[in-house]
Image (tube, rainbow, N blue to C red):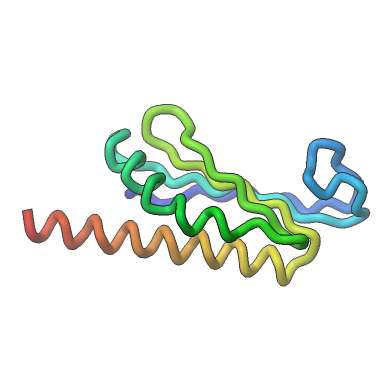
Length: 109
């Protein structure tokens, strides 16, 4: 897996497209994991699905989708910085696990 790309925005106005559109303050961020091929991206996507179901809360939402042929995209929308930090830490932890599994697989095959 290549290094993830991240794009964060701190907004102080309402975003009508956001799940939190009526709030005065929210944070949005996108993290892209780029894989060497679509098969590894798809395996990672399937591996994350059980965890993904538990990430939406009243304060933060993570949206995961496949993008292009080899990118797994996570979009975070949070009401506050603490909820954002928890969400980004979950995504980073997942990325570290996938990266470590890929390293082990290369060593053993």
